[in-house]
Length: 460
Image (spheres, rainbow, N blue to C red):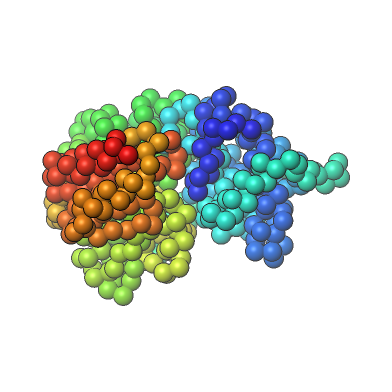
């Protein structure tokens, strides 16, 4: 196996043909299947422990790797339930539906086209925790895996209904007034970046009574722009909003777990507002909890504060946020990258859920997207990265000394916080870099925090 694969709580990812090959994919799939069959995948209960759900996004390497993963799973005696080309949350829900021992999703999420990855899902529909992920890694790195003999090779079945079940569950969400959304007949501009979103987002919008104008609906994985739905990549969507006089523009990432919003004037408002709007749609009470990660904007805290709900921050990574939501019985949670997690359906980032909640809020409030943004204080987030190699412990010590008046959080790197600003310094789990993220009322204030972090990284 390659020594340069990126292995983290998010899964295993690499460059297609360099770090990630069919042989590597088959090996990791067999390791995951072994973990699932051992009973660890279902708490030792033995129910469905040979069934593993498999799905992929639209990347051009997806069909090849799906065959490799299928072979790896069959080789250790797992029965594969193949969903084909679907969204990441569709796979998570299918794991629960089939009471499978787990699932494998072939997607590199927002990474460029030359990347792909395996993401591992446990029987609860949530990405593996550190202990389970470590065990799968040990199995993949071991000398041998318990391959099935000729009478015990696993089978394969297709599940063609996974997307329709997913959309049906979204439309049946309690507390969401679907009829009110349909009455509004929203004009929606949509960009699915030629990823898996084309397989379900147009249908969801049509079932919500929206009038849809779309770009990049093809599901061929030939991304026409950098696929991450950040503001600088959404200029074409903004132009479509203006041209079609849409009420809102919507963009998803290639595996459809993140959703970004463009307002009615064609301006990308930033991914953090997706979760903030979803919180306002749910209206959590003062006795309820909202969970987000350490790098999520203060607009989320402001939204929760409107209803008296408390906010708890978890380490970066969907699995960390999900398990904190479960532990605290939170009403909603997510990440500032446009990932909304609504446990009324399932504890995973889900762009169809996010879209439905955002439209429900607009239908209820009967205002524009820009008016919703204007209701709360604005902040500016600045992000930077430096090459990994700096001695992070000395960087953290230097930041603590420099900002002795800040509240500190060391769950994931170091987060320094004040009432209206924060700085988060952490090693990336998906790239060989150190991430620096700061937020403040102005870009200049956020840049100053970033520069202090850069200076200490350079000096370490």
